[in-house]
Image: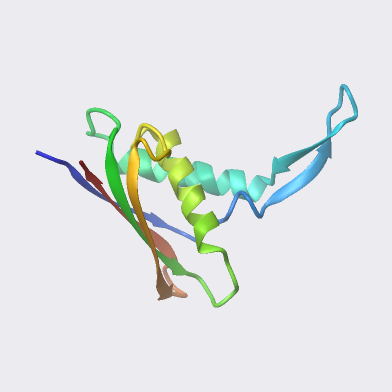
Length: 129
């Protein structure tokens, strides 16, 4: 019997890819890219919520299809594919899914759900195969 998980993250989804900043390595002085604090905090918040919602899950899902519906806080332009990447990374970090590669996630469906000023969120449905 396959599992179906429905998870909800309440809050705006920040893209780690578009939230980079350049810093200098203290030891070598070489420039390097790093996600900003807001993007890291957003990922940690998603990991916490997903971990709480899957507290009784016995093991990470190894083969699945994922449907994501994103409700934005306003009409500001955002890259929905980068937001999906942030969500997938948080699902892996929270040990909800084994990996976000094609070997684990066989199908990915991402939709814009609209603008919800009072409750921006992402609704994620994971169906084990």
